[in-house]
Amino acid sequence: MTDPSTLVVGAGGFLGGAVHRSLTARGTDPVAARVPWDDQDAAVSALVHAVRGLRSGPAPWRLLWCAGTGVVATGAEVFDEEQRLIARVLDATRDDRSGPGTVFFASSAGAVYAGSDAPPFDEGTEPAPLAPYGHAKLAAEAQFRGWADATGARLVVGRISNLYGPGANLRKPQGLVSQLTLAHLEGRPSSIYVPMSTTRDYLYIDDAVDMVLQTLDLVEQGPSPAAVTKILSSGQPATIADVIDAVEQAIGTRLDIREGADPSATFQGLDLRMRSAVLPQVGDRTFVPFRQGVATTVDAIRAHRAPIETDSSEQ
Image 1 (spheres, one colour):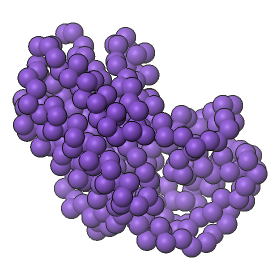
Image 2 (cartoon, helix red, strand yellow; image 1 turned 135 degrees about the horizontal axis):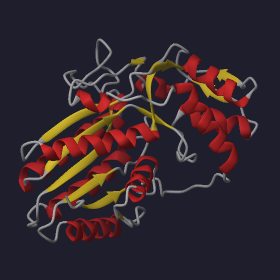
Image 3 (cartoon, helix red, strand yellow; image 1 turned 180 degrees about the vertical axis):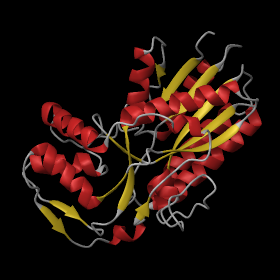
């Protein structure tokens, strides 16, 4: 079967870049959307052009939307801008005719279940976001569902647990493994604002990419149209204390950790263990062991660390 034409939105970011590299290594020829994110009008124009180009013929297509802005502590106004951008792109392309296609939207399990009860959480858990970040992810999921319904496209909403691994954007204050390592290499202390028992499900980037692509394959083999929400997680929970210990072991020395307080801590769920009840065969794999993944991440940051600059290319 011919591989579908594929467009990756967010190929300059952590997940999108890894997806694009993996598809290229597998012999496909994915297109990386070139988007001037700092200018919304120009960004919308570029994205509409790219999406229309992807869907212009009768051949099957895939749109992987891996772009995202902000972190848990980011204010609502930033996400409001992102929602407007997504709405403008989807509204402009809603009535375009095309061949059969599938959309993947990268959401955040930790953000949408931050205030949910009774972990581990699965797709049947009622979302309960605590921060504007989580509310924005749920709103974007709904936007893509509406677009998929209107266009007849298949949709996969991937609620992804805590990603880590080589290639994370070190300019973005997110990703505990990378930020602990970077702080140590720069001779800075690391500040921790939540209890050391705070628990996350850690998913190595290579595992995440494989799970995204396998999920797309399975959904495309099923009845059409289909809309699937799936948690992508490893089932490897680790506390902050565990993460610190793993990074210290990989670096070979103690880290300078400072515990403190910050208003954004109220947005953090304390126990975000995950599991998936949807397409469970996707999780039937050998995951990269957490300490091995941490060691690989530390080594990569040591080898390739670049000067930190203000930059908006995460999307």
